Length: 87
Length: 507
Image 1: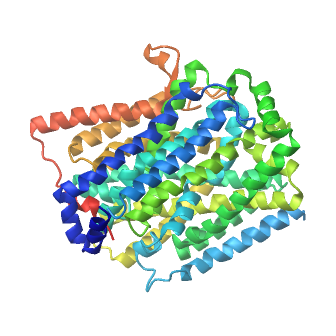
Image 2: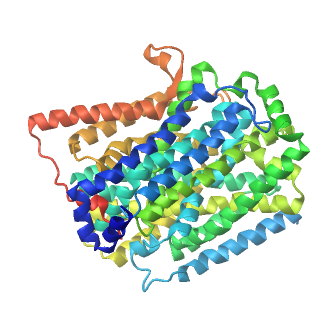
Image 3: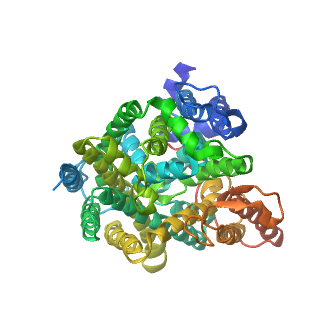
């Protein structure tokens, strides 16, 4: 997989487009994009965090969990970037 | 002169010099091209893009308004958190597609893309006008941010504001997008320093985080968490704002200025660092409650400056004020460049001088940026600033109406241009009507008082929902229906100048 990727980034952009639109190789990476749904949906589920307990360092759940989602968003975007690099 | 004001002026002067020097930074052979003046050479790497887009999205107004909202409205003001978390994964794929197709075809504005994709100068004009109208009050609000810190330092009158804006206009004119890109480094460094100091110093003086949240809970009562009837508003506001953020022309300017697709992807993972800072800034509103801050003449935008004034030594309060003041300059510059590019590409070149050379386009855009800033200044000075705040609220709703053409257009060519135009008008009308029904109890205005639409107006239950979300839903339905009708009737559709592979091009 890694070998093929290097190979692909080495060829010209025009040829790469061709490979990309041609299909099967591209599809494997595209599956990682579905992961992006997690940090889109979770922050919108208010019933999970709309309460005070449990507190963390004095922060009520409502406040600390929504701050913590930032790390989730970061992490997911980073994974998807790594898995779809150069495409 | 006070220590505060001296520190503020020194930092402000440093930034002004940087703005002028920026013209020599990564110097091009010629500035006489929109790719250079308006997009900084389309060659920014990961770090510059991070500072540029971060400096662009998280504005002075945000730093002042979000804590003010928390101070007054409690938990509802924390919607900025889910909003700025979900927006990056949401726009991850659309933005790299937009970058590729724009790189391939040399698009400078979102309306350029719509023009080529749907073969419709009219639709492109609608998108351009929407962008300009949504951006103008946003620039004006940056002035409100500067005004708030000037007030806290005891500086009154219009002259300081006019001088600050004239300097901004001059270096934007000369250096284009390079100016805010370079200044963003200083702005963000100051913001990070101030916010780290704030969360270390202030809680220890106010009895720790426990004490701060208890004070807020005591004052806000049930507003400390979301009420059942406002949860839908919270969800749709966060989601709608997330959709709207990258439809603004100035955010797309930052994206198109980057070097390649990977720079954008990396930034989608790195930009949330600012969201974390924003969350902590929001909590300044609660610190202000715990510190017993009373807004100056009931003006909530003074809450944060007054908190800094009370909790920090004078010299550091000066640094904090400079951070907010400079925080206004970066987005104001980028926004005026984006609006100027729209005026040039989608009005001037399209309808006045189709054969304008790149150099002519750059000159028109530079002049237009001055014009746009003058308009924003007049908005604040001649008209009640409250007008800008109302307009900015409307701005979020109306920019969402470009979602079907700009956002969905990146994925599908299915919509017919007639359907898109009809959807735009329907969404716009629905949005403005709904905003009209919302009163503002705080300012005793009967209309345009907020973006929470009560479903009881439509005979529904007594719960609120974000106006923009409903309006864009109406837009999408009408677009789909209009497309079906246009296809059935066999109306002529525009020619798509882009090809499928264009959306994957990289450099």
